Image 1 (cartoon, helix red, strand yellow):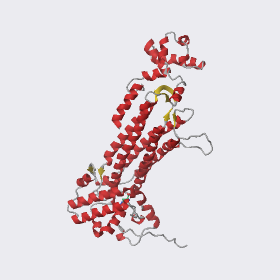
Image 2 (cartoon, rainbow, N blue to C red):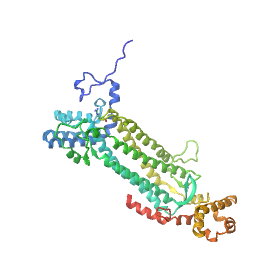
Image 3 (tube, rainbow, N blue to C red):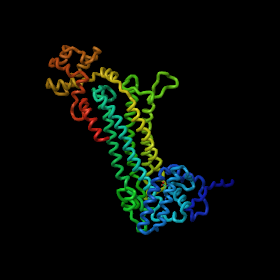
Image 4 (cartoon, rainbow, N blue to C red):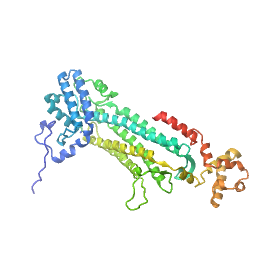
Length: 468
Ligand code: ARG
């Protein structure tokens, strides 16, 4: 049998000094990350410019070379942005694509740019710069979703709806109060991103391959130029740490979980059996077979896309687990996960904000639903505690009996006569009827954080100040 011939790719001119042949084609394919990491071009150029300026300031690079490098990098940036740049897989990644083009443009000076750095600290630096911007941008997108929720919550601060536990009617609340719960969740999500940003914003550059460099560089100067809080303190850690990305994906996953809960509620609310909200044609789709259908696809997809976020966190955790220090090529896979998570969040946050602005709450349908499930039973029990000095556990028991009575007569609590109530407990007086309406129930929930409409209105005002 003859040995199958290995297809070969072109040799890489940037590291091929002691190689006589190019890599196997499949090696080049599995190795190349350019299709993913080309998104880092602007950060790569910014970091290279800062690095070159620092090298010149420290006398490691001549002023002339530094100038040529900066001009060449600017030219490359405009080529990329005008679509005039060709990225090639032979050059593996964004760093070598840019450096190789720099050599075409300015000649030998390009070769001096890589002094006192390596792709290991370079990629970690670019990635952190990219993620820092992505986090800042996410803050605006989250703010926008909060604003959409706040506007609806303000309009519906006093719109009654059943609140659920176990998805069973529990106590009356207001629709505004319900939406405000998500404003709070998103506020914590923003906090998590803000906190994560602190650890993203430390600079690996200057760690070089893993051990630091023999050149007299000034990492603080580069860090300042790039807006980093500080250079990372340990060179091995600088090139191998990916917990900044993991932390980001954990926060993104938590946000995704919140988004999926809201999306699921929208799906439920749109179901005609609930009918709590109507979505316009703008945010629903029809069915190709059932003419009556209006499907909340955007909400379903927002719910489903959370899987990608959790998947990204999972993928990166598994990738990093057990990796010895320092850099390993495994880490090249980090960017695809983070980019996908950010893209996914852009899509779902915008769709959610769109849906929240689009939806029309149906106050009457929610009011009708309040008739189900003896929703003011807790108010009856609370009344017994307050007005008859009954211990809450006994009040709970008495109320249970009254609910059974109403159930037997297929009527609501407020439809029972005083005599019927008194047949369960003679201490009950006519005053009890004042607490049995859902209006009264929400009005009375005026403890801090409660659903009383006046509090919801205040919560909206406060939240605008806190978040917008
Ligand atoms: N493309 C690589 C990555 O994303 C850059 C670092 C390569 N380092 C190396 N030692 N081969 O991780």
